[in-house]
Image 1 (cartoon, rainbow, N blue to C red):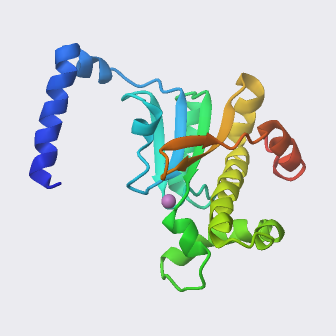
Image 2: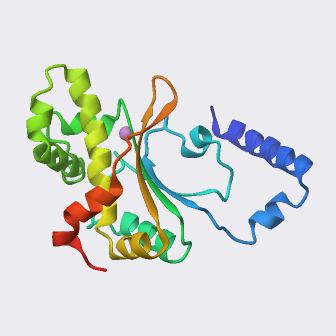
Length: 208
Ligand code: CO
């Protein structure tokens, strides 16, 4: 796939959209009212809109290495704040994926330079869930479980934000933890009980 091909593809896509609705882009330019905030991995195989069957305007998206929600990351904090306070999304999805290179790297003892502080967020997840993870003998199963637990802990981090706590209480904002299985194409809902998770952290993290 070269750059020239991308522009050809774009022209084709524009034509297809206009064939169906000649005002498509005009309407798109009027504004956005997405119901979902999607926080996922930058991995090229995990294409949020494609796998969710979503169209432009449907999903507000934030992606980084291993779908981390760090309170020191101004980018993800701004995205969450804007999505909740101004776009008033009804759902926040944290979506990890099996075979995640970021999670894999965090399981190995190696110095990756500037990636170290980022991947430390995932090492912290490992530490929190060390007993469970160390009880898993099979390396692949352990790797998959860390992907799932990372999603869980990043959902916890989403729930630590004041604007999220307020929106959960006042307008039933929902937080979801999902994993995309690259080997099947399926999205797996981890079925995390967010009410339970939120009440479990309220004593320490309640702001609103
Ligand atoms: Co990944």
